[in-house]
Length: 402
Image (cartoon, rainbow, N blue to C red; front, top):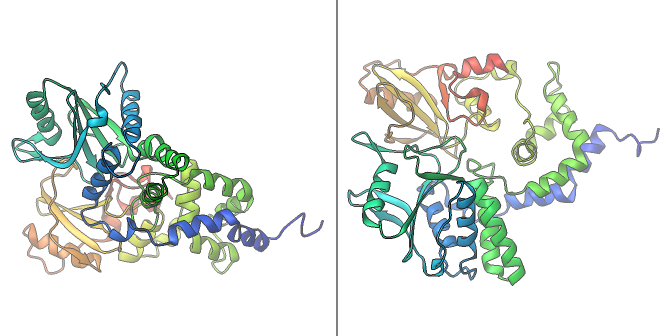
């Protein structure tokens, strides 16, 4: 059989690496992006600013009320028999950080003569409580009393499908749904109307919320191109899956080197976006790692999501919480007593290079006098893990399940 009919592993890897779609995909994420270079500081606020800008019919995107109409149609589809009054939405005003009577701030607030929109935007934080009262209840009470002459609509815009708020009047919309039903149609409308400047902004934003390198992924936005890549190269991608799972795998092989070079693209952009199982690490390899090396490997394989996954352990009568940012540095917080995610956690200090340094700071804050503090990475429990079966488990237990 000729080489053309039965290509070698190297031939298939070269074909994937040189595929025009694969090269285009990599170029999109490796090119400068105005949103991504802003980093993660106050990220929730600028996501709110973007959404407010897009939904505002009076803004300079030149799309008028089109994005707002698509958004309201999405909201209506989530609750049976809901009909939103759209009579005067072209005149709707939007603002961010709208202050309520008690000083709390609504992330995105839209008003017209007949309609009030309350949008709570949750990227990584849990709902906060004041004196036992969740913020969603505060927002609801404020609007029900002040805007009783208008239709009120309460929306939770969230990064993760399992996020929620206490008040059941809030309708949940994910960033994936926001992209699929609002941003993507708006981008297509820009193409139709030849609004190139807005189209470029929307494309840049779409790449940012799906960027696997610097941010936790809020949505899959390149599914069409990922599907084309997989259809053309399914054989070699599945060979990579098999090889990476072999106990006697050769770490000098072409497959190993290719996968480790392109792990984020193959796992996060191609496999995950198509609903296929990502390629996971081997337990015996991870067990050889300690501290930051182990956590970095778990970051690469999505068990830990930057700025979202909490690494939890108990010290004294407190729960210590360690998180990892997009630069793979640690920051710390704590909660007295047990922690279930509903309590607000203040950041004590950030920028630690070493896990143990971060642990010593938070342990001192909760009253520990030990100079030999810290705990093994294997004893840390994952909360808000990127892998469902790892949720609520200690890292050591997770490795035993691989």
